[in-house]
Length: 248
Length: 197
Image 1 (cartoon, rainbow over the protein chains, first blue to last red):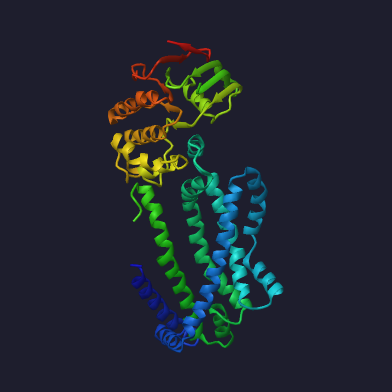
Image 2 (spheres, chains in turn green, purple):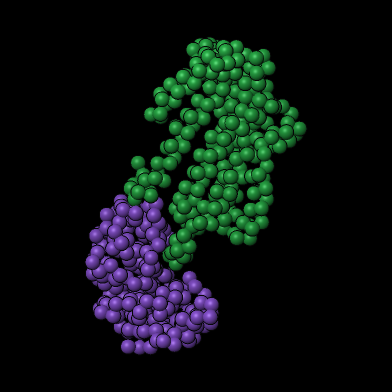
């Protein structure tokens, strides 16, 4: 978060430079964008639309993680399941989000479900593959030790498998969480009547450049807040364990 | 009888490390397995623990097992007390044994393995094995860190465990290690067989 003032300063400088080069009609000055943002905030639109996009993205990530982690843990315990699931998930991982967005629009029509489906489809494969990788990478000596001491299966899962998988899952979660907002916004742009992406679409259709910049700034701000507020906190226990300290 | 190996033979590829090993351990008995590194001591211990299937032969083991691996096999993300709690999770009253055994081995309960010396990690692995109070305790090179106090700390509970009715099977490449509990000393010979010393 210490880099935020510097980042804002740089964005402001670049904004004014763009205004000077392209003109205020194509690239409005940062002060006008801020004023537009304040107007949207005062009317409540800014927070309502942000909450819509946030809730769709969060629901998508939640579903993807429940399914991906659960399936990854189960598949990781069976080499046969890993062999069966890996090619299919690799193929799904290679599928561009626009395919899922198009299918969701055909199946469900335009609306709030499209961004959630797009986020689930886009984030489930990496979460599943990371969890699978985490289980497969576990130290076989720890498994042997658990067998020798006849540690009960629920305890093994909670205290050996899950902590071992955690760094792998976290890397996937950090990547997918920041990607989810972009996915949700793209899906709203193409297939929803509301949300930040839809507002970007309507600002573009009306050539409302101040609005376009203001809604874009909000999407970026959410991404930064998610990374600084959530992902950075989750990384701390992993770093502490690597340094041999108790988690703060 | 706690452990009985009959005609145990094991090969890694074409290399035979154990050949027709017979070994019986009774309750209260301590057996020391000596020999240089690479002779097959750890392989024999893993077969005895049921962690490795022998190429030929049978393993008959009764009762609960505890083991201290040569590489300690500690959970890196949990502290000393958590490592003991994990291994003792299936043992009734296991939680009450954690503090006394950590104290006995001079280990702070809240230290993570990553912050411990090699000797401390070895002592933690030994504390975990002895705290289990198993019928068969297997110790792979338990005294590998004498400078850190591992040998002194590890040697004391061995006779205690044997006196409590548990059998102890431990390996060492240091021929001077002779805990009071050791009733027999065996060595793996050049042909992979077991010979008394």
